Image 1 (cartoon, rainbow, N blue to C red):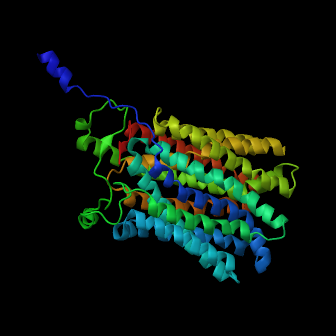
Image 2 (image 1 turned 135 degrees about the vertical axis):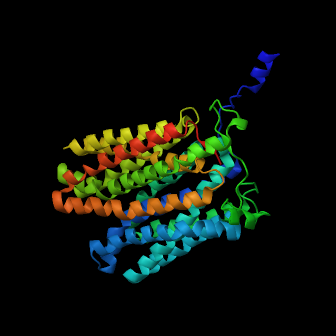
Image 3 (image 1 turned 90 degrees about the vertical axis):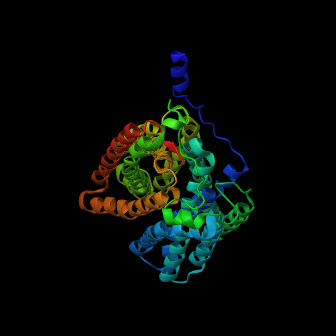
Length: 434
């Protein structure tokens, strides 16, 4: 009898999580498609915009600053908007705000107008993405790491087409604007799609009852009340309790740091890799610029592989390994004297970069059950600061020491990311589920 009782009391391992790509999950990928097209179609268009407006490169670079400021503004605003109008209303409004901002960006006759358009675009985009990430995590539960990574993969894959569309429009004599204007169509289409998605605890129609009490307690207004360890943890639901919640709380600053590292690596490399290839190889400007596509290709491909893999291997272990892969890619790029080798380095770096942000966000949200929107706002703030600081810092180092030496910053940041991801994985053996 005592043996049977002990067996009954033993923790029961949960089944391995599985990502179900239902209509709601796939519908929540739409905001990433909108944002991916905007980022990768507008960035290569900045020099053309500068030429049309007769402004300097530094002035044109202020569009990146406006994007970072939009992210900073969105960070505290997003959870308030979700509490006020619900997640569905926030997603629809954010998508339409992106479309409106791009209209201002394309029609702005002077720099102040285009900067304002970029700020509005970034504000809507960050609200849209931040709210979507939490919605995906709440809907997919223990499969959130796979879903969030795959959603980012959808965005970057569509983003690969953006520069080609802009180039085709320019070659046809239409200018760069029609290529970027596709974002308007995508934003409106996403708003319609999101408004029609089926109701669920993660995406209710309107505000749920008790939203006000949820807001006053600090819990997400529309968060489903589910807190459990992820599948495969070997821990029963009943043993999760306060001890697990106490442990995972210490993981939050670690995964916030990994978000900063991931965002800094991607943006610093995106901004300055072309200059490094130009200075270290015999590639011309056109070829050097084209090598940046290798980074996006690597990022897109790995997201569809690591997403499902994160349901079998601890996401924190994959995150730590991705920073190691990023160092390998940096080493190939940094030592390259041939454009083809540099391209290979950027592809390898992209394989590392591609999963760093989505896995960091998934782990961060899992370490903050019931606080998704508030935690995601902190992630948005951290990412915006990294976007605003990292490219500028690497550029300042390049001015002082040359681009080649300045790129030594990349492995330093990657090692920091690897360390915090490893520590986070030790704190949270398996992440809690939203």
